[in-house]
Image (cartoon, rainbow, N blue to C red; front, side, top):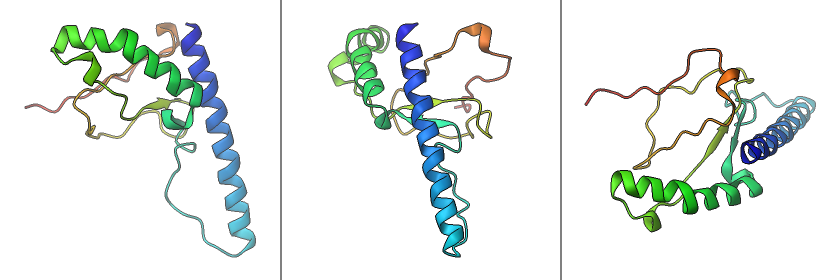
Length: 132
């Protein structure tokens, strides 16, 4: 619980800082007569990349080595030493999007870890797997 709360807190702070930066850049662009971009940033989507979270990156790396790696090794036969954190995304469902778009991950294994207690979920969600 403590780890989850720490990761959520760091992600929220990163999202807020990103939104402040986005707003400052938008104001500067308006003052200079520039048009706004249609591309959404991670912060605008309520997301924080793990690579932007120094404490979270270290914590998840340790969890991967000590807990998740051995679990994946026992289930899939892949050496825990060969499993690395390629990318990570902390999602906050307070942004304009309440879900991820349909997409394909570029990794062999994808791990989804719920950081909030089940009591905070109001239905929906889940993962879609395209038929083989």
